[in-house]
Amino acid sequence: MFNFFVLQQHGIADVTDWMQYHAGTFRECSKGVWMPTPRELAIRLAEIYGHEIDPHRTYPTGVALSGRLRLAALENEIEPVSTLAAEIAQPLFAGDEVLPDQAPCLALACFSDELAEVKPDSTAAVFLAAQADRFEADPDIRVEDFFFASTLLGRAFRATGNVSFESRLSAFYAAVDTMQDNGLFWHCHQAPYFWGRGNAFAALGLAEALTYVLDDALRSRLATMATTHLAALAGYQHESGFWHQVVDDEHSYLEHSATTMIGYAIARGITGGWLPAAQWTPIVERAWEAAASGIGRNGEIVRVCIGTGPMASIDDYLERPASDGVDARGGGFALWFAVAMMSLP
Image 1 (spheres, rainbow, N blue to C red):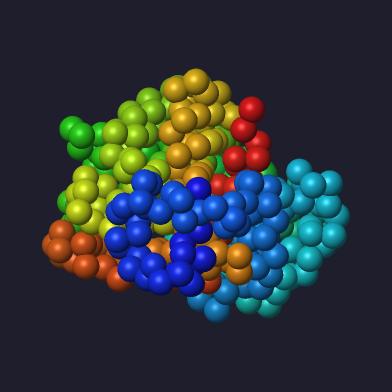
Image 2: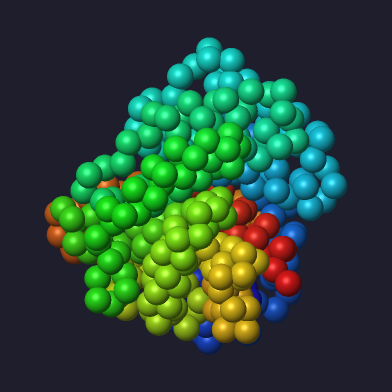
């Protein structure tokens, strides 16, 4: 494994060329380069991400806070980190600030159940349930909602025991009709394209749902959907370990956030027992090596597709810009993935 940000210092500056050919071409260049373990990378990312509520009040803040709490639990440092997380979120918990109605904003609450478990007096669970109550799925079946629905309704169900949250999540997935014969999901009906991070949102959302729901019939239905989808995605994984910006277009750029999110979903499937470790560990390890190679020492993430709503054409997805540098979305999901890799058997 190597690090793109170090390679840049040696004159290798074309991100697309690097990603398309890095599996073999630059292997020798990696000697002496920082090659972090999941724990080392998780610790570094936790130093950079999840220390304030982002100005847009969106889910990357919650993902990073969740990642910091999970890492702290593994490192036996939960008390100081949970105290800091409660302080960061206090304006939201106290009602001094209300999140916007949009689902990406409501999903900022995705750390709240984890905080409530260690700080039951923090009103975190009440805050989470309130955001879950406000959630409404897009009737066009957008893949982003797989994650938003699962992380809000699933976590609220676990935190409160209120079965209405599980019932709403079941109804959401009963309405999903956008998986195609190739096992991939459209972005939505309006945009029938296999966007990389979109399919990663689907994989992530199904993994989240399977973490929290208890109803046997629902679990069986979700597990079938998740395993079918991940099996399809595995067939499109680039030899480098990354996934493409458009999953089924090998000429589209290799995209970091899709890779960390899909990798995380696979890792959760292995630890959750609904993916067989022998089959899936090599796939997730390739994804991990790819993702780690695209993260700099200062938390820079290479090639994260910018925020993307439904696009009018496939060319719009192919030409969608990607950012390089410190990125809240990319960093939060990378932290989740690193901590999940720490927990693999």
